[in-house]
Length: 169
Image (cartoon, rainbow, N blue to C red; front, side):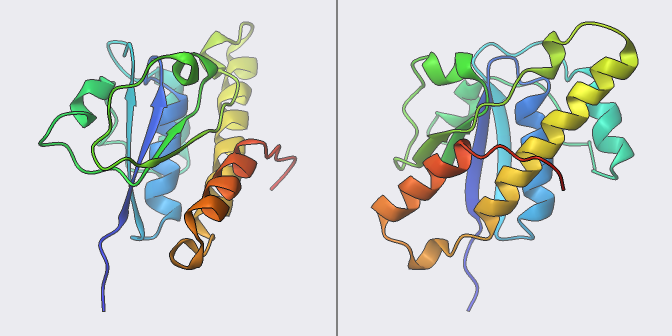
């Protein structure tokens, strides 16, 4: 018996780094059990170059990567989301659109690597650190026994994952 994958939407303001990184990780780590998407409340013109460089360096397919508005996922023709995660504090504080199907939501905020100043090496490190934090949370999530958890327990787990501070892989 096969079941459709769970649809997961990662939200951030600009959809240029964190949410795109999370989308790439989820589509790899989810191993067909999850289908990830990302969007922003105020998307920029394109993914940040360090986002693409990082993902390509880690052998992620980046053909999916484009900055897009969360409005694409609120319409009647959009895929029904099972989970919606905000990965930045700004997006978490904004009034989100209505998501068809009433998905479970949680805030998994991580620092914005785009805002890091300094040398390119320091900035690249910030992007790598963002990847590490998101990968840790997503790895926990994809290993939850989602089908056997009641809704309250699942929500508590989702909230707890957002509080996870990964130290090292």
